[in-house]
Image 1 (cartoon, rainbow, N blue to C red):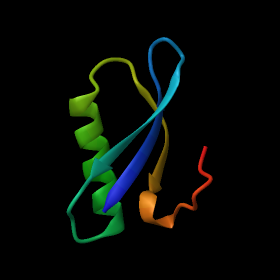
Image 2: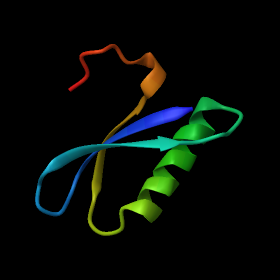
Image 3: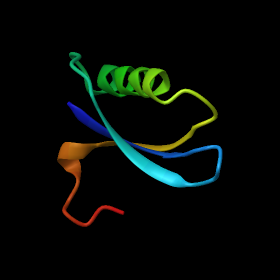
Image 4: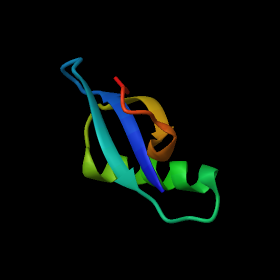
Length: 61
């Protein structure tokens, strides 16, 4: 499952990253994606939103 994570970094800039997680349930995928995000983006990053990328339309912002 491809998961988009919208987050704010220490400079108050809002960014989006994509994490891929391979788990049995949607909840487990979201948890795995957030763990991967924390390892890939250390520091004071505040997660604002976690979204299943497959459920998005073309106009996400």
